[in-house]
Image 1 (cartoon, rainbow, N blue to C red):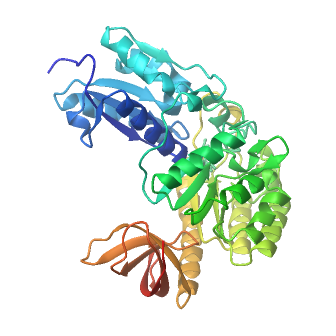
Image 2 (image 1 turned 90 degrees about the vertical axis):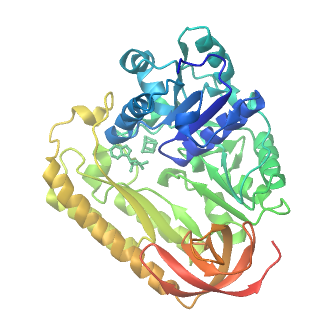
Image 3 (image 1 turned 180 degrees about the horizontal axis):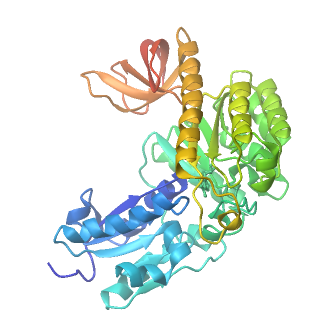
Length: 437
Ligand code: 5AD
Ligand code: SF4
């Protein structure tokens, strides 16, 4: 098969964070608005968009193996590399992997032009970072599932020394209040019952003197919207307004993902986190005072350059002190261009492996304990999809736990459920009274 020009079918594959999932959905809507047809089968598509992640080395390497796999299949689709690898590596990717389009996360509204360019046999390259122009250039939201993402903020000015985000996603920038309220309403009209507000530093969102707490209070007024979540937050941006929203806004789910990365003040300083162990813990105290049943989540990095065994144990003791409901943990991965990549004291792989294993054992223990403590609780579950067994449906508790139950409720319904048993990753419930969605 020869490389298609003017592709008719396309497939978007997103890697990495939820912001990429959101971008992938918007790219899909954009191509569909151009008259192209989405296909689930990457090997049958005329155009494949790989929406990539650059956060750790492993994620970055995936794009190259994926390109190889697409070609091995005998197919020769037009290939677009989008996302953070495209931003970080730019034209290099076209040299290394001979792709047709390279488009950064702030430029994908130009995909149709880039496809036209590639169809003429030229490289479609756009890694510009125009301030927020992409959102205004994207088609309106039409059809979404019961849970939807809404990017409210992009980029990061924090410059943690290990992190590529400030380079790939650019400076912190907030979308305007009106655009967000309109998009949230469109999402609800299109079927969303739950909206998760997204941003690399979502709680740094602001418009004038309005903070994320004010935006959440506004979204609370949208009829038909049942649940609001937000992710990912930075400790230094937990405003009083946002914490108060956890106390006052019933639709705001009792869940907070607040990465801390490490429990040692010396390591936090070397990471340029601009919070200490203690200031982080005091923030959690305030959040818990506002919403006592809040479930906490975090991100952790083991093996940051120079991390001693005692400093690693400080992270373990922080985990003991907090009691996370769930968390993500990673081995430190040196990223080109970040200050930490050039620091002395890079940690040996076997030490990283050992620390990650011990850290995850602690986190798994706490997650299992949190889930076990939920047994006997009655809560609302938002049904998200069908389960494997007949009559079984899957959904989420307010605390973001996966719940399975037998019910005749449909996707998008909210049901009252008693949690009857708990495993490490999911819980079983039985339906109580069905509620109107
Ligand atoms: N190495 C390992 N983990 C990283 N993260 C960010 N950069 C790196 C890196 N270089 C983790 C942090 C962040 C999450 C999204 O990814 O924990 O919160
Ligand atoms: Fe990366 Fe730190 Fe910004 Fe998070 S706050 S995106 S870890 S630089």
